[in-house]
Amino acid sequence: MRRPIPTGSPRLVAGIPDKWSPIGQTSLLLPGHQVRLIDNSATSGRPSIDAHTFNDGQKGKTLKIMLHKPYLLMTPGPLSTTRSVKEVMLMDWCTWDNDYKMIVEGIRGRLVNLASTKPGFTSVLMQGSGTFSVESVIGSVIPRDGKLLVLTNGGYGDRIVKMAGQLKIDVVVNDSGDQKPPDTAQLRKTLESDPAITHVAVVHCETTTGMLNPIEPIAELVKSHDKIFIVDAMSSFGGIPMDMEEWQIDFLISSANKCIQGVPGFGFILARRKELEKCRGRARSLSLDLFEQWNEMEQNEGKWRYTSPTHTVRAFAQALRELEEEGGIKVRHARYQKNQRALVEGMESLGFECLLPRELQSPIITSFLYPRAEAFTFQRFYDELKSRGFVIYPGKVTTGDTLRIGNVGDIDPEDILKLIEAVNDSMYWNRTQ
Ligand SMILES: Cc1ncc(COP(=O)(O)O)c(C=O)c1O
Image (cartoon, rainbow, N blue to C red; front, side, top):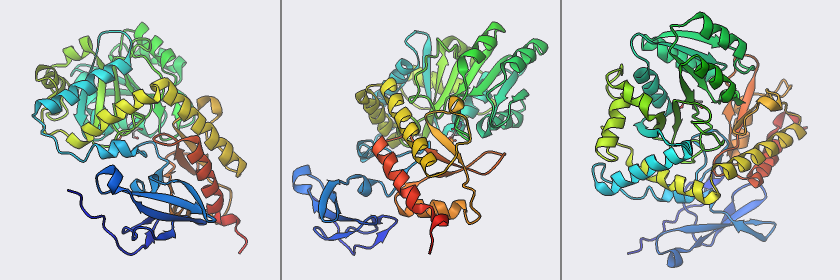
C-alpha cells in the first residue's frame, strides 16, 4: 500500500525544503535556481519525489541530490554517498541470522580481494569509527614485551602515539613535521640503533594535511629489519590502488565511510593471516580484541561478537558493489585525481594557495592556506559555502591557518566546478558593498 506523500510549507533551510513543498509548486533552491517537486510514486511504487531544477525558466537536470543530500560533503568521510547506498538501509536485519551473516562474509571476501591479488590475507570488521579499529590493532597486535615505532607527520600519526601511551605500550616516535614525508634515513638509524622495536606504524594518507606518505620505501626498511608493518590507510583504501603483498603490509586499517563510500558505523582491518593468528591473548581490551573478533567471524561465519551495525553493514555491501560497477579502485582513483586537479585549479584561479607541493599531495583531500584578507574567518566562509550547498573542513595543522576540502565520495568534476562557483560567490571579503 502506498503511503501519501507529505506536503507542507515550502520554507527552505540551507538549500533544501525543511518540509515537502506541495507537489508541482516551485520554490527557490539556490540563487538563480528553482526546484519543482514532482510526485513519481506511481512509477516508482513507493513514496518518492523527484525534483527538477529550473534556471531562468529552463528545465535543468533532475536534482535528486538535493532531496537526499542537504549539501555535498566535501570532506574525507563521512562523505557524500549515493542514494542507492542510503536506500538499502531501509530494512532491518537480524544480527544472528544466516542471511545477514552471508552479507558480512561477502564483504569480508571482497575486502580481501581488494587488498591483494596474492593469498594469505584475511579481514575483520570492527564496530565503531575508524579510531576504534586503529586502537584494536595497536592494542591487540603488539605483545607485552614488544615496542612500537610510529612515523608521524600529522594528527592521525600523533593519535597512534597517544593510543600506545594510553595502552602502556613501549613507543618510540619519528616525527618529520606536518609538511614533510617520513624521513627514511632517520628510520634506518632508529631501526639500527633500537633492536627492541618489533612493530612500525605509519599513516598512508595523513588526512590532517592531505599528504600521501610513500609506503614502499618505508616497507623496504621495515622488512629488511624484520619488523611487523602496520598502515593506517583509513582515508586511502579503496581510492588509491595498493597491494598489501607488494607493499609488504601486515595490518592495514580503514573504515566504512571513506573511499569505499559507505556510511559510518564500523571500521575494518586487513591482516596477514599468519601474523593475526599469533595475536591470541595479546589484547589490552575486551571489545577491541582483534583476534577474538576475527576468530568469531571465522568460526561462526560472519557473526560479530557484539551487536553489529546492521544497516551500515548492508550499506557497505552496496557500496562495494558500486565500487565494482564503477570499474574498481583504479577507475575510482582516476576520478578522485580528476576531482582533485579540478579543485586545485579552481581554487588557485580564485587566489587560494595549497599547503603542500603537488608531489606530496594526495588525491583525497587538500589543505589550502587562509586567504590573506583581514576580514576572513573560517566560520563565515563555511556558513556562506554551506548556504550554497557545500560543506568543507577546518584545517588541522599546527603551522599556519588552513582549511581543507575533500574531493572523495559521490562527487564528480562537475560538482567540483559548482563548488568553485560557490567558493567564488562566498568570498565575502572581496565584496564591495
Ligand atoms: C588517516 C586517518 N586515521 C584515523 C582516522 C580516524 O577515524 P575516525 O574519525 O573515523 O575515528 C581518520 C579519520 O578521518 C583518518 O583519516
